[in-house]
Length: 230
Image (cartoon, rainbow, N blue to C red; front, side, top):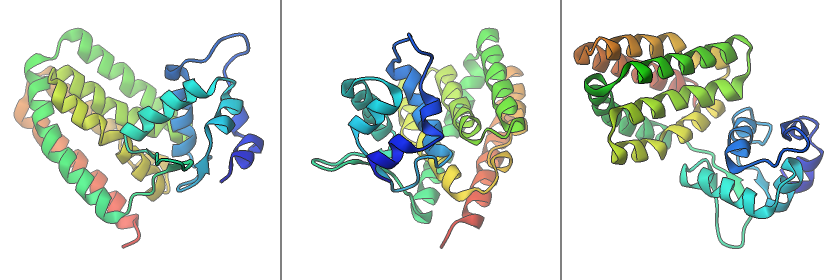
């Protein structure tokens, strides 16, 4: 997809924020990510800083920072003297990413059980409620993104910065894989499973929390790889 095609896409201009408010990187990042997850910007499509700047009404420098964040998360590919490109992970990459997540998130959930505060538990439940709302409204992009953010927020609760940073390089890419492999938004990562994990964390039941997290990621892997092209 070219910058011109992006500019005239009838859906993408709705991402522009309310007139009079200067969009920030934090404003644009979720909207651009949602557009990628909903394949309004298709897998492997290419676009320019200028084209995205026109869509969002911001300078190239702001777009450049958003793209840098997505590149760090491996959602897009940035190469010298080439346009940014949406990543297109294959089945082998998906399997490796989920293996790495499984090993990491077992430790994360154990730490969260030991350290979670009532405020953090409430924030996790609020995030799950938003995820559920988007699923019920069939808003695929935000639902997938918030599902990933649940895992990142749980990592923040665990209080281990290196683990959180490592997951931040895996979870957004998993969201992209979900968007590309899964046909229905309501099947990829059930909010009910997230809620059960939080219940176990709140009880400080590490054994149950680890079991639930393992099952949750196993379910995700089975669903994704069953629909992926070998």
